[in-house]
Amino acid sequence: MKQFERAQIFPEKNLPDANELIAEGKKLAHSVRVKANPFLETHNVACESEYKRAMMARGAVMFHSQIGYRQFSKSQRAYAEIYARLQDANYRIDRYGICLDWNMGYPSRERAARPRGTGMILERAQDFRALTHSAPVAPHFGDFMMGMPAAVENVSAALEAGSTSIGNLGQFFTYRLPQWHDELAQASATVTALALCAAQPVEILIHSNLDDGFAPLFNDLTSVFGIVLLEKYIVENLLGGQAVHCYGHTFENPLTRLAFQRALARVSDTPGSMVYGNTTIYLEGEAENYANLASYLLVDILAQKILPTGHAINPIPVTEALRIPEIDEIVNAQMFANRLAARAENFPELLDTTRADAIANQLIASGKQFQENALQGLSEAEIDIANPVELMLALRRIGAKKLEAAFGAGELRAQEKRAPVVMATTIATLQARADKLLNALDATLRDELSASGAIVVTASTDVHEYGKIFLEAVLERLDMQLIDCGIAADPDVVAARAKQFHADAIAISTYNGIALAYLRELRGELQRQQIAPMIFIGGRLNQIPENTENSMPVDVTDELRALGAYSCVRVEDMLTELREVVEPRKRLET
Image (cartoon, rainbow, N blue to C red; front, side, top):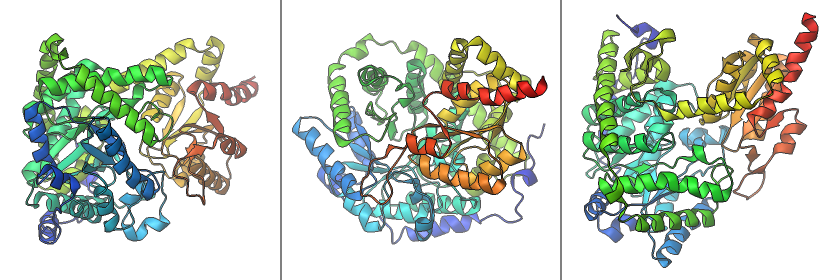
């Protein structure tokens, strides 16, 4: 049965010409080339993948760290200092993930008028080069590069700064920059930038972080693997590049984490980029979180020792869940990882991969089925699957839930949900936490909330969705009516939907250090709509102070409360305050 209609996916009469965009990228490659930097020169390699292959041949575990403070000077200092301090201690750092602000995703001419978060903004192409020349560490430009409206200019600057690992393609399919609505321009820039990379005389790793794409939104891990194959098809078959995949943030189960790495090894000869740290388990104190850090690092270390795939391991500082880590904390996490890798030298002898390999077989077989189903289904919808613009836009617009329901490998059941072949642990874990929370909740409060039928608008201020998913799982179990405004929701949209659906409350999840600025704008929009629902805000309740050189966000909880919002450290705090919705309704009914 035909699942989709072309007119539903593409209401536009004309789409960008993919052949023209590819030709533009190839032409640009004549003038934009990978240039030397200290990493390439020190290791005498033409690109990072060459270095990775040499390290894989040695059986060496590689180490990755994320850096990118709002102050460029501090980021530049971190680039040099982390490397120097680790080298002095006889430890190693192989690559840096450069954390850019989402503002970098907008075309440079528009950035001054667009919202920004807490990350780094590179004002000029020379800033890219100055950063990568601060130490002989491989620069990985990931987020807000590929997949964004500014993809061509950002990727060009990264290549000329000597970066040969560039992403993040996964963001194209699920991220929306605040106040940006031109998907066609975003797709055009992405395809041109991909063609530019593919036309380079050296191998460029086109990085996709699955956790920033569809991975957190699928119930089945085999669907995630199907996306791996679809992205490889787009990048490699249609554009002649090299696609590599990062995973890890949503892979809490160590068995499926190992299985996914081993499955990737069987479908790609290209070295991977990195394995992301699982910060969803950073829920406790610093000492306890070191145990959580070790729990995923050890799996990733052993995976690389048994079957090297070139993925660098990524020890996330234990303070990450609270705030942006300082340089000292990054160094400590790297020392911990280096030492753990040394101590695990003989551990592979203890590990039997039989069960992991059986799961890897399922991932590959059902992932291929997902890929085949998707390509066939989109062809039947008259989508040109040989056209990267059409294929990428179609996947983005259909979205994770509909893609899995239509093309997933598991048996289709009620409400267009499929039984997972291999359960994806992120959603399952969040749902289990929601069940645990409700089981511990006061029975009277739970019953009153369930009977209220409260209408709650949910949204996140940025592209991070886990807090929002968890909150919605709790509210759904309490039979509340949810109005989902999605991720990176613009305040005017949230206010308009709150008025449209007569919402009792608005629940905001925030992560990227813009809590106060977002609330101020939302308050203004609610006043224009002449409504006053309760406002709850949770997550990282911090922001970089205005008119300051400080690069670290500070707590703004008191300021949020002064604006009339309920700042919630825990979801339980929100549920208690929601009695104000329940009690007036009870009085009205009686």
